[in-house]
Image (cartoon, rainbow, N blue to C red; front, side, top):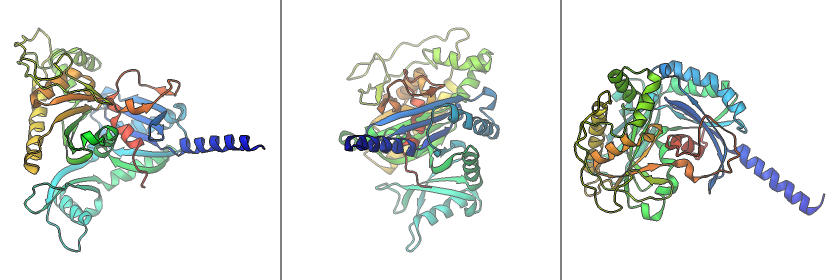
Length: 400
């Protein structure tokens, strides 16, 4: 064999190894299960992607929905063009406890042990029944104590996730929180030198809930879950219009104003940066548009004021908590992600209520594609903010 042929064969073998070494990322979402595989990281290249929508009747039944997703996973992977068996997944949000806790440091005691004690006391359970992750928040004003974002999941739930992956003929190599995965998906934007001094609220609006994260540059300093998402919006529309469940999402996406009886509040406009798009279309690039006149609610036009008021109240509380931790460092902008952020009227309403710049993330914009990759159940010709967790998982460490 000639040197040139040997070199080409070596390069081919190296490429195959890199592709097969890339883990298959699995996001067990409430609205859909998303499976993604990318290779490399500068830039990442799409290998395959597949999505499976959740039947409406399973959205509120966590156990049956997860069983449905695990049953469908082997076929989805086998027919989806995925390569290899290594898999990384997120612990579903509904199985995750997340809370800020102020902990007094103790000499000779690891923070992980202090976190375990604090969380088990909060949940009133045996520390051994939980799996923990924590993030210390540097520089927070916490009265001499350490400000810690504590996350925990039932150990039994984690075991079932691992067993489910193995039953699907996959090799689990990583498991992460949805918070960490979502932030990692926009890492390329938040790590830019000009973004290190920015304070950003990330809102991952999903089907079952909304993840709230505040980051200084790329470092997470706040995280919580708000139990408001697409399902609650749809239930509100179904109750008001008497439509069938499968029609609710279409009605919501067609709404020009989610709270048509209210007077819209003006908000500052954002500027586009790679991977993000300005949400408030039509707003001036600098300054604020004048508030619009009150819009009368048409007959049979649904009104999402109630769930949106719950959501915006919780977000305002989150902003106040951040401001108390970091006096003088206010949030500059809000970036929306998650599948429900495709309903731009809802995002615009939230941004206006918070009086923040608003931008919509499209995490997969940073992934190179030829257009010939196997893709099932999703159209990547459109922005897909709902793939933030899946992409973040694909780029996360394989540390199991």
